[in-house]
Length: 179
Image 1 (cartoon, rainbow, N blue to C red):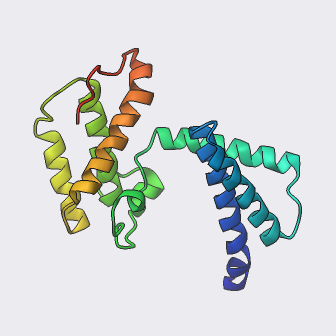
Image 2: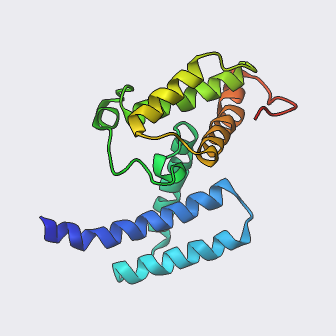
């Protein structure tokens, strides 16, 4: 079984690279550098898979990328994309298997959603919820988040609020974005 996994892993990575490149182009249409990234990812996929990428398969990858973009809009960012040292290789199986929200990943999700909701309702003061959840998350993580990590995480939650939640609630973004 490990031989099969070793054989398939480079192909999986090539697919992930191509789908991520396409997703970036969906998120930032018209960015010329991204077309080069897509072409490089396509060439890499063809080299790894030792075949030409058909229009039909490319259309499937484009659909996968569109689904990925939509999924990213409704979920917090991956911890590894914000935390300098990631989560130390730890996984939250309760969250992954059933949406259990009391572990590391679940608390990350609750904190992100709380920041987003606080912004939606225009609360200047987070009250105790956000600070308490941050402390809970940092306790599970085993360290405090850096200022840069926190700022990036909050920016992601605010972006989610402004681009997903506000349109759902028929609300418009604040004239002076909160920090």
